[in-house]
Image (cartoon, rainbow, N blue to C red):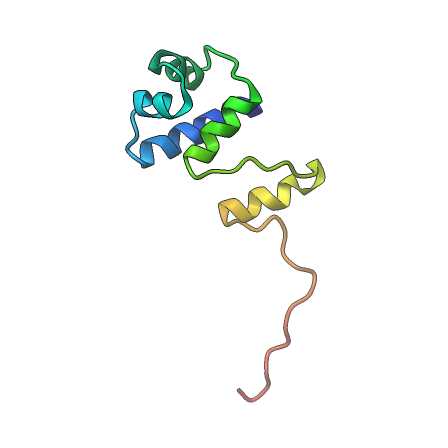
Length: 94
């Protein structure tokens, strides 16, 4: 499931760059049909292929500790996972 999410993110990055599957395939040394199978989930690409795809699309794969995932996802989505337990005192007589 996680690899599929990565592949879909890479597909969105490819589309945002207006890069065709065939063009990406040329840069990777792969046929367009293989790029299509990867994006459709019909092929289980090697990690090196996914890494190369990411780098060509100005993306980076990063491994993080599992315990940090909620915080990282919140940062990426712009949401807060929880409110801080402290807050700045408001100035009196403002």
